[in-house]
Length: 103
Image (cartoon, rainbow, N blue to C red; front, side, top):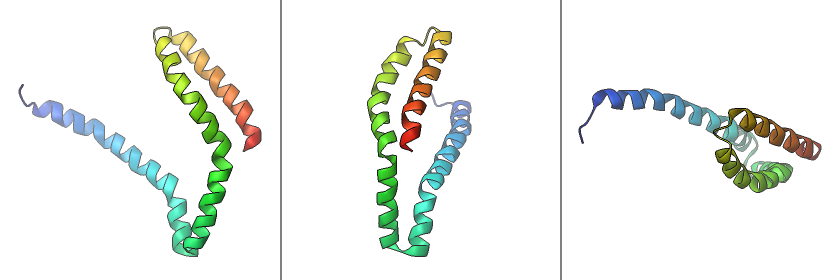
């Protein structure tokens, strides 16, 4: 096996966007907690975290039920792009219909 500089630079070029996306998602998902902890203290952060967990329970529960089923289904449909898109939209619509009242 031979080291290829061009392949390495292509991988690093692609990876910078993945890395940037991960950093942005981290800041979006944890920024509120850092702000609350800094401004209001750890007790307020505890209440906030508990309330957040309770409010997200229905969505998290549904995701834990549906996600393991989606991957095998989508992999079976990967060769039929039209059916894959239609199935994805139907599942998204169904989950939205079921979970929106819980939010």
